[in-house]
Length: 72
Image (cartoon, rainbow, N blue to C red):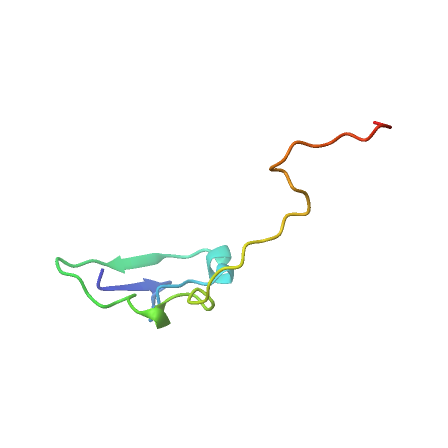
């Protein structure tokens, strides 16, 4: 991939905001026969993707059998 544009505007990062996607539009890719540096490197991703993810804490433990109370 050599480059990309969204609605005719060149993308300098490999990210499109959710707000832009929700509006709709045209995403164009320029492909080539050799690799390029477009979209490579830490600064090319969405904000926060370079930091480790934190797993959500479930409200209910669904991994163990449920113990019924005596009044159920």
